[in-house]
Image (cartoon, rainbow, N blue to C red):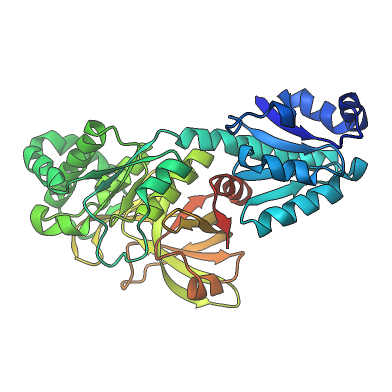
Length: 411
């Protein structure tokens, strides 16, 4: 993989001495990456494209970095092996950046630790590149209760490189009415057969849910959407079914699909997919069980069947109609994450342990009892909206790196 190293060193040091003095670190980097060294005078008016970091070759470079800051990446990683006062200079630069409202970190320690950080950064750069050019649909307006969950379309285009596309909800209804029962018989039977049980819905209800799935999938294809969020509640009166199955199956097919028109949570789902390749579960923080032990329940009525270990076909909790999915998991490690703000400028993240799947009749159908590493006062004092995103496995370091590169600050 290619790696750009924008290299700063004091005017007292020759260019050759940089490679001599820091040969242990630079040799290790060269073994793994195709390195392009860029010196300050070679920077033009545009930021360098691709994975780009700053190599601090000596002390006395603080003013040089400050003068070049607008041509550096939005999130600046300063590599310092500690030789030639490079660590001291890096700390001064980082302090100035924070005072100036800019973001970054110093990567310092044993060579193995620095290499680990470089690898994480380079992987995150690939994930950020995968987001560029994505088309994200908002099908219908966000639900009225989501008063803190919209984004600025202009900011998302500028910062993430994502195009937000509005789609009228009545296109879903027209598509639903155009799909016949016979067209979805086979996929309805397959959905039922793969479940370990069916509770409330009849087979006819499953068929209606699959007709809605076909309609939404047609919109995804017609508008060339890479992800979408759907105002599913507004569809219930007109289609007499729910969107839970449509969202579940499209998530399973690799199209991040969110509920209720929640733009911030959908974009979090898309970022998680770009970084990990994993399916995600969008859920409500439903009940704190033990503040001291950081235990709480997250719940929602749609989840990709393939993400769960098993699933049961249920009805939708709030409306007691349509079809929902109750996912069942064995205990495992998970990650809880949410990026939000109109410019997606802040995020929360925590590793978590799934203890059990609960079956409280007063919550949405898929219920995960988690023990988070992070204290739960975040949810009660500075939560980023309602919905949060859950993914299987521990991805805290990788997701933190990509979200910081996207210009978001960890709470």
